[in-house]
Length: 145
Image (tube, rainbow, N blue to C red; front, side, top):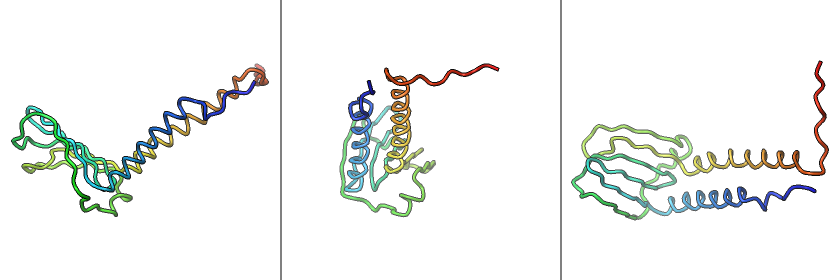
C-alpha cells in the first residue's frame, strides 16, 4: 500500500498557509508603513514593516507612557537598491531619539529562510514514507566483512 500523497499532509498545508502569510506580509509592506510600539519602563520596542523590510528597533524612551500603540501611514521612501543588495541589516546608533539597536530583514529573504528548510523537510518525509511503506521491498542487508 503506497503512502498518502503529500497534499494530504498537515505539514504541507501548514507550510502553505505560512508561505501565504509571508507573501501577504511582503505585499502589504510595499503598500504602506505599519508599526506597533510597545512602551516599557525605560525603552520602546518598535516593530515596523515598510518597503519590503520587517524592522525591529529598540528606541530610547521618548516621553510616552507605558502601553501599546498601532499606527499606519502612507508608503515611505523605499530604498529599492538595498532590498536586494542588503537583505539583512543591523544598525547601532548612540544619538538621542534614535534607535539604540535596529535589525531589519527583507521579506523575500524571510520567505527563502522558510521555503528552503520546509521543502527539504517535505522531500525527506516523502522519501522516509516511501521507504517505510508496507508492501515495499526492504533495502538489502549489509554484509559484514
